[in-house]
Length: 66
Image (tube, rainbow, N blue to C red; front, side):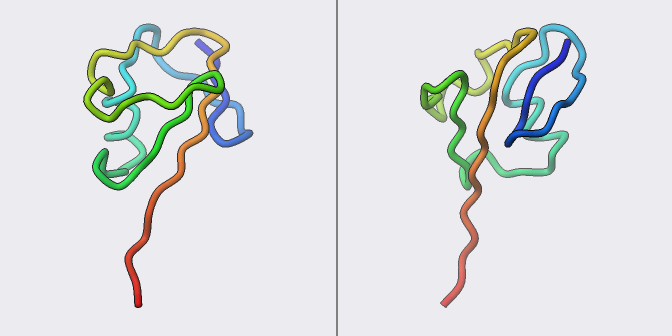
């Protein structure tokens, strides 16, 4: 299936969960906010959300610093 992640097209296996995608991108779920098709996905739902063909994702990750 084809999705868009932060404006870039990407092909993923059908039915991939949002949690699995974050693992593949090496992003910690606790340090990101994910918008799927213009709606924020609650962190506790990442494992239950199956991505679909044509989904548009925006992933923002937080970086610590001082």
